[in-house]
Structures are given as C-alpha cells and as structure tokens.
Length: 209
Ligand code: DX5
Ligand code: ZN
Image (cartoon, rainbow, N blue to C red; front, side):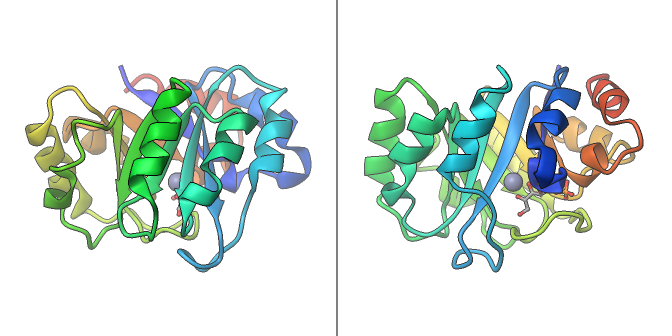
C-alpha cells in the first residue's frame, strides 16, 4: 500500500492546524521548505514546523529545497521532522547532515530534480531510507507532471527493490496509478488534495491505490 504525503504548500496558510486535521487519514505531512536561492520561492522555516508539530501525530516529511542544509538540519530535527530530504544538486555538507539525521534516529532522503540522472544516486543508496524523484521543476505547486519521471522511477526501483521511492509534483487521482505501477510507494500531492472540494474524502481516494 502507498503512503500519501499531502503537501501543505497548497494548504491555506492562515489555518494550517485545521488544514492538517483534514488529512488525518494520510500517512505523512509533506513540508516544502524553500529558501529563495536553491529555488525561486520562499516558504516555511523551523518555527512553523514546531508549531504544527503540536497539532498532529502524522510523520513529518520535510523536503529541503535549500542551499547549505547543514546549517538548518538541527533546527528542523528539533522542530519535529521525521524524514529529512535534501537535494543532490544543492551545496551541502552531506556527511554532516547524514550523521545528524541518523544520530536522532530519523530518516534520510535524497532528491533529484527532473534533469538529474538517476545514476548519481548509486553511491548514496546504502545510506538512504528514501529517494525523492521530482516530477516537476521544484519551486511551485500546481505544475504539470513530467511523463519522463516514470522511466526514472522504474530505474530506481531496479537499483533497489526495498527503498522508499517518493514522487513529487503534478500527481492527482487521474495519474497516480501509473506512478505507483512504475514502482513508487510514497506519493506527494499538493493541489490535488488541498485544492479538492472535499479534502478528507480525496485523501481516502488516494489511499485506495
Ligand atoms: C514543488 C514541491 C511540491 C509541490 C507539489 O517544488 O516540492 O511538493 O507542493 O504540488 P502539486 O502536487 O500541486 O504539484
Ligand atoms: Zn516537495
């Protein structure tokens, strides 16, 4: 069965606690952290993560789209992150981040952007709990799913039968099946969940895949 990780990037920021209550039947809360450098947009910091941590027991899936993630990893862990995903393409001290996440008994993910080849993941797989395949250029919600991602998912699944493969960007009820069939088991959905008329019902519909 898949794990659903609704992205609060598409939620109403004025009432994040209420928005998260609507996704109680999901598995993770996907938290898109953007710094205006690695991506051309700015979102949440550890202070927001700490506040929403008090409102839910769902797993916090923190997607760091930032440069120098080593400067902030402690803060996000202390704020309640359960999974920390960093970007292969960013400038960062990977060893430091890996050690901090493992010391805390938390999970480590590595993400690649659409133009990055999956072969770069080879040297990292033994450290990782999760690979995050971006199926849109990171930075904004509501973009169109890039079909080329399906081949990348299949290739990662061939490289590792057991690792969690998360896919992020442009996924809705209309195309989630092909993402899962390609080998993904963690599904991010922002606008398809929080933009739906009935958010809680949409979560249950996703969970059927
Ligand atoms: C994009 C973010 C995504 C985004 C997905 O940079 O990483 O998590 O919120 O949004 P949708 O599902 O609307 O494409
Ligand atoms: Zn994301």
